[in-house]
Length: 226
Length: 332
Image 1 (cartoon, rainbow over the protein chains, first blue to last red):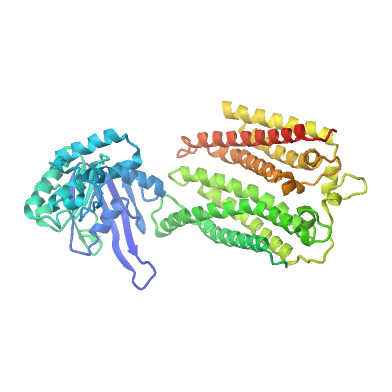
Image 2 (cartoon, one colour):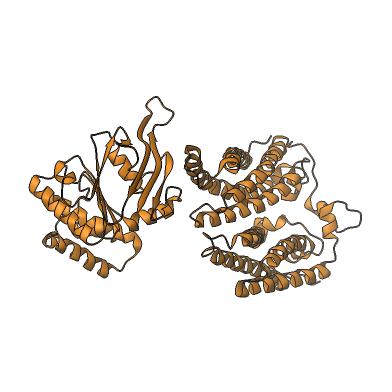
């Protein structure tokens, strides 16, 4: 379970350009559920997602992960949690050009020191599950949009994270690929993973597998605590 | 003032260390007053970010402080040809009344900075900043010593006059009855008795250290013994170790041993000695916190590594001294 208590995030604090992206956000996200953070551009969805995923620290407030307070953790502990607990799927696939799909997928697991043969086997299995095993040796610049998206999903899963975080995952996908993406999310849910998605795409937040939609506006949750 | 690169380096190092320690102490006081890990207040989160930055910076700053002791000795050694009567660093340090007090403070600050680094390393092993108040309390305690050292070092270097006739190490560390001063009093100690005291003290220290390393008992005792042995070793260098290195029964200077003529052996001896005492005292500084929940799985191993480091460094120091005695042409 993820619990946010009075989370604030202010950019450029103290400067004339100070901007408060999140204001006193109180939110509880249950395990093994698909939660969608919905709201217009600038509502704070991505900022909230980055705070939940330990990619940025709040300016005030605390985040608890399975009862453990994580915002105060020194960076090296936070890195460990980020690496093992969260899998990130970004709006753009953000694959590294010049190396193969397989190498891209295995990259996040390198710091953990797993044996390369085992890692390769796991990565190939992940690629096979999403029907792109045949592209494993291809360079990422040769992939189509949908294939690149699936490769980035396999990369997010390589460390077997309990929580999948997806930021506007369907923004660059057509309708067919968006449906395909939601099928993959359904599979994650069936495997017991927690999924948090930011989106203002009705195809996402109106999907049957979504358990909960949290509406954000101007850095606040509509209706107060959620 | 004598404009020499080493003098400028010393003054710069002192000023940087003082400035950074004062800056860190300002936040240290805020941490001591306002730190509350259970709070999600903006101030608490700012302090969490600040301490990460400050402790990283202080690691380098105190690293510089450790090096500055050897830089200071090196500078005094390099400048000795400029002063009439000075044959080594001992004479240079005597050109005005600030030289030796600065050296004493540098030794004290070396040990204090070393202990702070040990505490900081241990604190960084815990996920909940378990030693944060202790280490910033120590920092606030260290800060006046560092500032005083900078003031004394500045007074020493800025008041250096090239036309001063100073004393040579032969008179400052003379065993003759007419000589006065702490150096001469130590030099006058019976060399053979000091040799036995030295080896006895080292044997006790190594036994206590190995016992603590193997059994995990007697850590405080070893910390105390390592400090005592450090003092005995410093006295021994003046009393008899120097005699064997110089192969002269009357030359007790603890500074000539850092010169090229003696293969810079003094630097190695002092590095081993200072490393050993910091690691030894570090054990005593950490033992009260070995049951802190976030540290109990890691602190035991770190303390054992410190004990091993201290024992190995003292053993290496003793072995080096023994080698110098055996290979010396001096027979006492």
